[in-house]
Length: 161
Image (tube, rainbow, N blue to C red; front, top):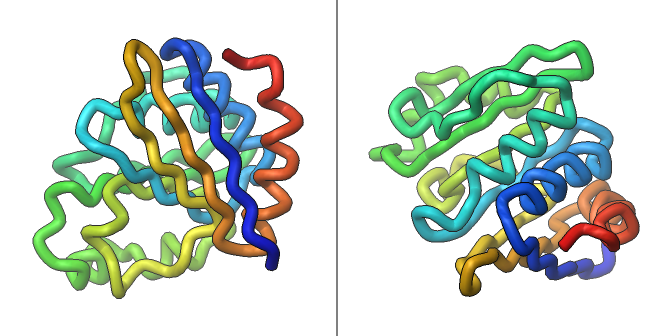
């Protein structure tokens, strides 16, 4: 696997949602994505774009208190984890996360550092940071699937600003 990194700087929330849509398509609607960044950096906004690409029209909120929100959609299954309030990575076992992570689904994990040592490696690791009124997204591939996805993403996001 070659090291692949791309940097995107969406100018507004709509652009960030559009990047999420492109990411879902680039990943072929499966894989594990880690979302890193401070509070308010836009992790859930990016997740909303991913879910929109899969056909979810309802609200998307961060599952901070439930830790995981599953979405069964016509185009596939998505698990949206938010581990911010996770006390111990072993709690994931009690949630049934091992089965979820083994599923051929698209899995989004906010605050993956809280599950370190328990979570499998990510296909794509995204670090979001605030940059003026916009955001900066640094996307790094963690697997061959991630490399291929980021190559497709680089092409599909050329016109998003």
